[in-house]
Length: 638
Image (cartoon, rainbow, N blue to C red; front, side):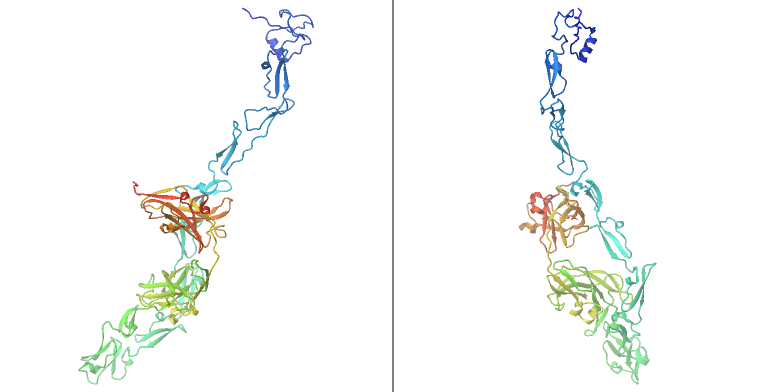
């Protein structure tokens, strides 16, 4: 059965859209003008009053996909009436604003949602379904150095946060070394890397020079530096001396001594000593075996008494024959230092050789008065000593004790109110002739309470009597005098408080096996006026400690804590990008099995300590066992 043929007539005056015309042509209709009142065949004579064909039968036929028009179907024709201004016309994206209609039926855009990230390392975007901003982490982004900690970093390389790019970048720790090649070289300085502290140790290269000023040029010598070899050439001043050990006797019957006023050697004739018979009077001959004159009777002797009386260690003996009288030296007996081996002297009361005493000692450096804050570390102090037979040559002289100390100004250094600390052998020194004759020692102590003090060195040999040394050139040779001691003035200084201290890395609990050391543990500290800027803040003490669980290092349980000195590791940026904090590191050794709390302890000299736990609060809110780093030492490791 065929479909009914559509109605194709169209009034002349009808309002017809292009869409309607296209539909009629597609249906095969012939478009004819039927006149105003003539009915078209086949439509039953039914049509609208104006004669136009209908467009719609319901409002849905008039949809134009515009949310700002009210689509209506009236008398078979569509009408699109603009919505009231302000009517909503939302799309499915809640991020581009709340859209609304205008009076002309057009949809106007709203104000888009603006998203700002909640942190430096977050990116923020609007969710179209909710219209809310959603923050997502930026990969490889950092806020501070704590975000950049990397396991397995070398002691001298730390990953730092670049405040401009917010990315982690490997950074060399200033002044840190792992091998000698990491240390800058200097002329005439031996530079080596300390493998434990990762710091470059510097000490003078022996016998090296860069100018004449580096060459010994003292009372008894002049020195020049050869620029090519960097070695000193020392020319002794003839007949000049600093002590008796610098002088040589012209013969076996002379005793050489040094005149300290003129620094010239003098020879004193030894009474009764002879080189040949000419040194002896009438009736005497020289016994060259012992270097002394012996009485010879007119006729040869028959008894020892005829040869004279004993003198000290020499006993006249009648031997008869051509020699007649001869001298015999008692074994292990001495009449003077010349009878003793090098390094020993003659004790005339016992007629026996005993170990030599201190012949010369003096304060080596510093030589100008010191002014320090009470409680500050002292600079290194150096002293020198000469003991014949002990100190000459390379290395420390045997059985020599050295101490440096301080006492009230004007009080003798052997007074019990003086305080001494052991010195340590530091190297060898040239005497005025350019000989490696003296030993140098170094020592240090903490500056005492505010007062006027003196500093002195003291030395002894074989647990003998102490010899006290003041400033050179005389030193110990003329005894100790306050006027030539080293003056020390100490005063009370204002102590700066620690404003912030905390762990830097690691920030999670540490676990090690029994007998192992902890990995390097880093802490940070801020002290106004001390830590800002490059390099370590002066007058700052740093320690890393461990103690029992649930204890406070600054409370009544402080006695249960053990502290290890920390070393400066570099500078850190604060949250504003300023080089404001100092970083320290330490390794804990010998921890017992169990779980222990850790804490950083920082203070300026003489100031109250600050105990730092985990960031962000650190020391600001006081130490809390619940917010500090812990280390567990296991005894069940494979």
